[in-house]
Amino acid sequence: MNSVEAKGPSAKRLFLYLGLVIWFLFSVFPFYWLIVMATRTTSSIFSYPPNVTFGSNFVSNVERLLQALPFFQSVWNSLIVSVSSTLLSLFFSALAGFAFAKYDFPGKKPLFWIMLATMMVPGQLGLVPAFVIMKTLHWVNTFYALIVPGAASAFGIFWIRQYAETAVHDDLLHAARIDGCSDFRLFFHIGLPIMRPTLAALGIFLFMGSWNDYLWPLVILNSPKAFTLQVMLSTLNGIYFKHYGMIMAGTLLGTIPLLVLFAIFSRKIMDSVTVGALKG
Image (cartoon, rainbow, N blue to C red; front, side, top):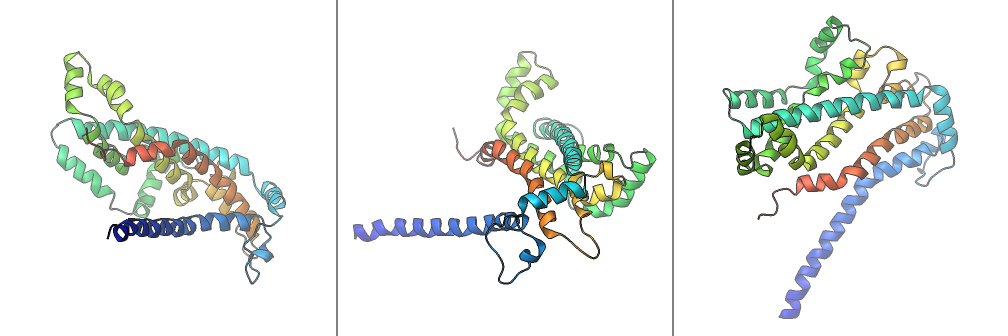
C-alpha cells in the first residue's frame, strides 16, 4: 500500500515536467524559427521540406540590411523613445498608484473606475484625435508625440495600486508621518523602495510595448531619420520582391535589447509575481 502511494506523487510530477517541457518547446520554437530564417536566403526559407537547421547567410543578410536602411539610427530612435516613455510612465504610474492605494480624497473611487474604463477603449479609436492634438502642438514628426502621450498609463496605475495596497503597510506610513515625513518623502523614501520589484516588472512591459509599437509611430512620423525600428523594418516590404532573410535578420537584431532587458530584470518580475504568497 505504501509503495503504491509512493508512486502516485512521482507519476504526477513526471506528467508535470512533461507538460512543462512541451510548453517550453512551443514557446521557444517561434524564436528558434526566427533565427533559422535570419540565417537563410528567401528561396531556402520557402523550400519544401522546410529547413529547420541554421544556414550560413546571416552575415550577408545583415550586410544587406545595413546597406538598405539606417538600421542603427532607427535602433537609437527606438531606444530614446522607449526609455524616455518608460521612465516617465513609471514615475507617474507609481505616483498615481501610490495615491490611489494609500490616500483618501474626494472622488477617489469614481476617478479610479473612470481610469479603468479607459482601458476598455481600443487605442485605434483615439488615433485621429491624438493626431489632431499633436498637429496643434506642432509635434508631428517629433519624438515628443511618441513620448508624452505614453507618460500616463492606466494599466500601470492599476498595477502599482494593486501592489501598493498590500505591500506598503499603513503602520509604516503612520510612523513616518509621526516623525515628520512629508507626503513626497513618504513616496520617495518609503513607497518607491518597497515598490521596486513591481516597478521593474512594469518597466519591462512598458518598454516592450513602446519598443514594439508600430501603428502610432507610422501615423505620426514622416521622416526616415526619425523612424523607429518597427517602422524602418516595414520599409523593407517591397511591392514586387521581399528579401525575407534580410527582414528576419533585422527582426532578430531588434529583439536583442528586449532579451537583455528581460535577463537583467527577470528576478524582479518573479519577486513581483510572488508578492503576498508568503505571510508573516
